[in-house]
Image 1: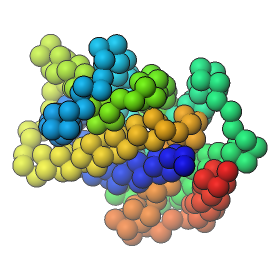
Image 2: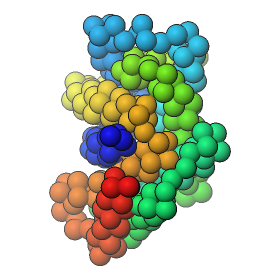
Image 3: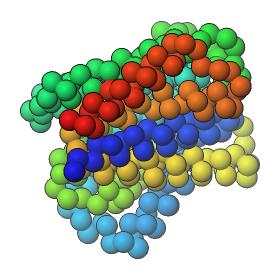
Length: 294
């Protein structure tokens, strides 16, 4: 049985974690938040991999590929995503990030010669269209998690770079996962390399790498929970889905995260999703049904 549906689990975990990221990301700043989150997740994944012996499933060549995947997909991609989120909020940042599905579909067809049935393409089109409709037309009333800081063109650029890097990181990781690598150990390698890059920036004393405000236990607890949901669980499940599934479909399923974010925003902000959001959600559900029933 195809396991692309696991990418939906990742999407939900990423949506939940994105809400948890708002407070610590604005408290510490983009780079400090990413550094602390990666440190927490590296410890979690490292302990799990040592206990399970997952590192033995990776050759030096595979570790190098996963390191490249982490540097591009996590260090550059995640940093750009949270920088974008700090500027325009999780909803609109999620809309830009959802374009990674389109990038991944192009790369999957080009590099892996993947093919989808007519039903699969129809489902993918429904899901992608639904994500764009749901988020783009989710309403314009002010919300406490909606804001705009700085130049819009820079926010757009950061969101699209994050999406492209996520796609490239996925493409690099795919061959390694197909060769039987342990998803937890593979995630750990990606995370440790991304963390090393962030620590290097801090040791080099780049001004933007410094925390905006000092760390405290409340913020650290939120970061640890965010990292556990998004990276320790979400990314590991995503790599497992990638190991057994089609790159295009896994990317499409994981791009539903912004739609899953809408009911969570409704719950926390008391702002009911608009008609456009419901239409988009219906398209996503129909598209998912077509993909999984193919």
